[in-house]
Length: 129
Image (cartoon, rainbow, N blue to C red; front, side, top):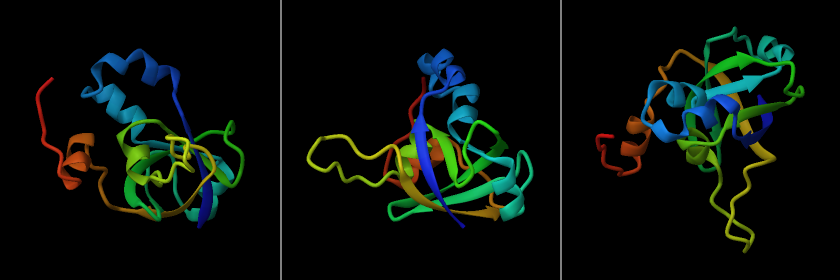
């Protein structure tokens, strides 16, 4: 099912910005907020996993219900997971579109990767904090 993805920062993410390798930051940035009606439509419950795909990539995120998110849209906090699926085009302004990105979402039993694992798939090297 197709949705429009918007990204941004959350208060929880901001409180843990200095420890991006930590569990709380990773948990926050690997979560997809979705309207409860949309969750029913694709057959997922709070805490289930969804595969979120764009023309640029695919990630598995935990879904959480939020009536603050409009039906037909999803919210994913800025971070390695959102960056992995955000198309790289910048329209000559130097900044990719972090709002209004078309995504396909489906329920999945796949596990969420850690941010480290995600970066390693792109050739990144793990380092210690």
